[in-house]
Length: 149
Image (cartoon, rainbow, N blue to C red; front, side, top):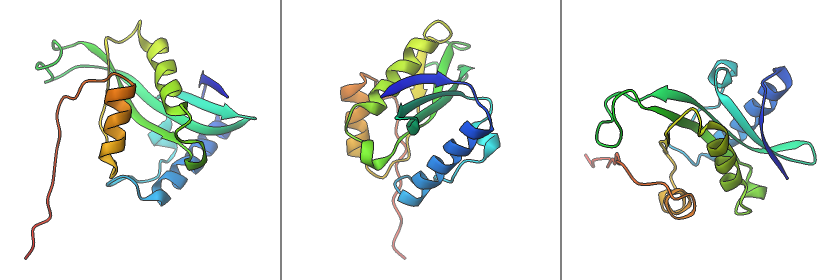
C-alpha cells in the first residue's frame, strides 16, 4: 500500500470521479452527490494505492477560520477535509487512518488544525474512527428528526 499526495491530471480526476460515483451508490451519507471535475480541482489530494489502483482518497484545502472563536482565534489557518473515502473491500485495514496521517504531516506547516464535517448514516462507527482512532475532538453536532403528520 502506497499512501501519498498526488498532483492532479485528467487520469487522476477520472479515477476520483469513479470512486465518488461508487461512494454515492453506497447511499451511506446524507446528501452525498458524486463529484465532478470542479469539485476536485483546487483541493490537495492524498491517495492510497494498491498495485497501482487508487483504493482510497482524502481531499481538502487550507482555509482561514471565520466565526469559529469557540475553538480557534479568527484568521487561524486550518485544513478542511472535504472527503475521505476507502473502497468497501479495503475498509478496516487502517487505510483511512494512514490517509489522514499523511495529510496531517503534509499540511502541519500550513495549518494549525484539521477540521471536517460528516453526514454519514453510520455515525457511531465514524465517531469511533475520528475521535478514538484519530484523536480528534468533538466540536458540534446538527441533528434532525422527520416529523410525523
